[in-house]
Image 1 (cartoon, rainbow, N blue to C red):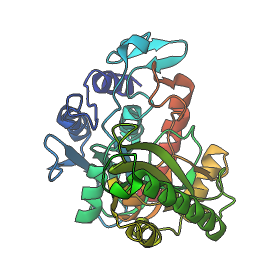
Image 2 (tube, rainbow, N blue to C red):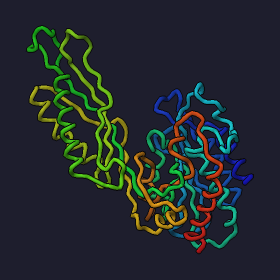
Image 3 (cartoon, helix red, strand yellow):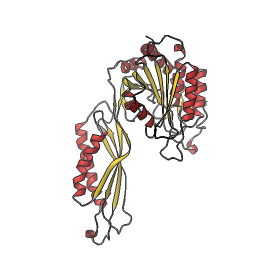
Image 4 (cartoon, rainbow, N blue to C red):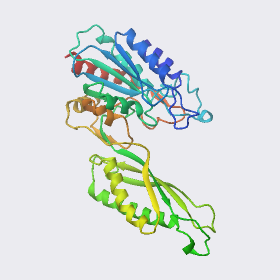
Length: 380
């Protein structure tokens, strides 16, 4: 257990914040180097690769053993930003208190890598039939560029994959996808005393919003899955900006919204359907519009509930496979592996929160679970 605590202490003390605000965004290279050193000392072969187009961002593939297939243990090296005024503990110092380890990333999800390193010790020097592959990615909290790059490169290939996101030790076999979209409508400004002097973009947006909500109802009739707590896709109209003065015709209006997609829905197909529905409404008013993603979408994730890995995790944890509302890197990892499950020791309620922590009573069960998976899928 000293190995686990030593590595976790180093990981927590090494900032790796991922943020769309470039003033807060940091490189994850120091964390990647820490992990590479730790796994190389255990006999792993480590491959560090830069993420194209992302300065200071890197992925790590650490492999023990050789051969096709194997077990991939995947996680991300970045954390969200933090509000120091709301923390009672130092976010960059591992603090053990109240049967918990406090620190930024203990739960989401640097703690997972330290647990993997501890779990692998009994397998060092053993004749593995399939490799143990540890995958550490960049920028999950923002663009998921690290996992996207690996999926595009087609490596590492594995037969099974476990993504160690915080699920409270519950095996997750599906989650919704997410699209963040921006609709921009351009009309013509003018004096409000005479509507004929302009084209009111806000009125055009009013119609477009109505059409989006109408489409939402249709999608909810089309796609339903009782395995989710919210069993239908959702569209949330999140923020709107338009116009500049009460006595001017609004010349431009912008709406940002999200779509939570069910398995079976594809982001580009949804976007095209929205475009086709909005186009005649806006063009009939003589206005122009543009519809485009705020960031790259994450497709929904679905793995066979009766698959060998999912059912093995269910048996070992005592929890039935379930779904979650939050998105993960699982759709990208699943492109590389035959079967994927999301399962980790932290709780999602602690992720992204002040005084983030990992409960000590989750450590031994997670190590035992990882060792059973390594034994079943790599040794036997």
